[in-house]
Every structure is written in structure tokens, then in C-alpha cells.
Length: 302
Image (cartoon, rainbow, N blue to C red; front, side):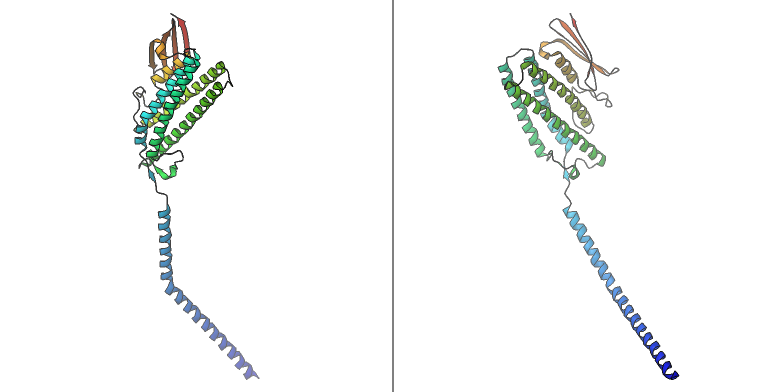
């Protein structure tokens, strides 16, 4: 009996060792198999990573390179032409407000100047198209300069340019709507003149923003007009013509109608002094040289 039990126990132990040995042998075989294929798998993974990296590079949007400074310099002449038309429009509004022209003459000249504005705008749009500069331009996909800091600065200037254009278009839309209402008899002449003057004030404020932007553009190489003061680069002065225009518009007069017109810059007090004579009266204005706000004005008899 004891011998039988001993044989059974010995048999079980032997079987267990055999199984264990087989398991270990199988594991060693698996390990050897994995070691054999690991280099191949690593290589395949590396190839896949290179492939997807290459495809990502190929699908990445190509940066649009734009010579923004060259565009601004070419656009400057057109902008100046447009500004000249704006000044003509202001003088036309004043002539109408002061009863110097008839209503029919006013609207004929108004239509003529607006057609000129549209012609200049068409040229500006064509120039933008040539340089691939559109209102929907994605700044993440454009490069204005190879220098990183300069590139970011130009992008900021571009954003300001677009915002000023938006404001300008909004003002023009309001002017067109006001003209339409007056033509159709929806508002009186006095109300029309009043609202036109309010829009002119907004236009003057917008012009000051444009002058400030022009000063910033000069720092990246954009040519500016001779009448813009640049002696002190740290100060964004408005131009002499702008100060003169502000004073004349406030007085409701045209430059051709006044005498002894003088414009002087007082840098110490940061102001323009504008003086002129009209119809036996002397006009004196003090205008903030950076904001364009009227500080003081006097009208005296000769």
C-alpha cells in the first residue's frame, strides 16, 4: 500500500516537472520569436512615422509671401488721390451749407465726386488683388517679412489698416443713406446739413487715426507725404494740412475764401496755431497736435 502511494506521488511530481519544463520551453520559444521580429517591427514603425510626417508636411498650407512695404508704397498715391476727393467733398458740403450753390448744382457735383471715388476704389482693389491682399486674408498663412518681429509688426499694421477701411466704408454708407433721405424729402435741408456736419466730425477723427497709422508705417520703410511732420519720431503729430482742415471746417469756410492763412506748430505746448481772415473777421484756433481736438478758438473783428 505504502509502495503504491509512493509511486503515485512520484509520478505526480514527475508529471508536474514535465509540464513546468514544457511551459518554460514554450516561453523561451516565444521570447526568441519576439526578439527575432522586434527589429523588423521597429523598422516598420519608423517607416510609418516618416510617411505620416511627410504627408503632414506636404498637406501643410504653403505660406503666402507678400511684400507689404512695397504694396503700401504703391498704394500711397491712390490713397492720396482718394483723400483729395474727400477734401473736395468737405468743401462741397460747406458750400451747400452756406447757400453758395444751388441744390441741383450740389447734387451734380456730389455725383461726380462719388464716381471719382469709385474709380479710385476700383484701382485700389486691383492693386490688392495683384498682391493677393484680401479682406479674408488668413494671417497665419501669410509672411510679410522673413524677420519674425518685423513680420508680426506688419501683421498688426495690416489689421489696423483693415479696421480703418471698415470704419471708412461705414461712414460712406451713412453718407449715402443721408443723401438718399434728403433727395426723397424724408428729412429737411437743415437736418441734412446738421447730420452731414456730424459725419464730417467723425471723418476728421478717422483721419487722425489714419495719420497715426501712417507714422507707424513710416517706421517699417513706407514713404510718407512731405506735409506730415516727422522731426520727432516719438510724437505722432497730425499734419499741418489736417490742422488747417479742422479749423476751416469748424468755421464753415473754404481755404479759397480766406486770407492770411497761417499754420504753426508749437511743440512745447503740443498744439497747432491756425489763423486766417474772412469777411472782416480774424479767426484764431488752437488745435491739439496729436489728437486734432480744438483746444480754443476766437473770432474778432479787424
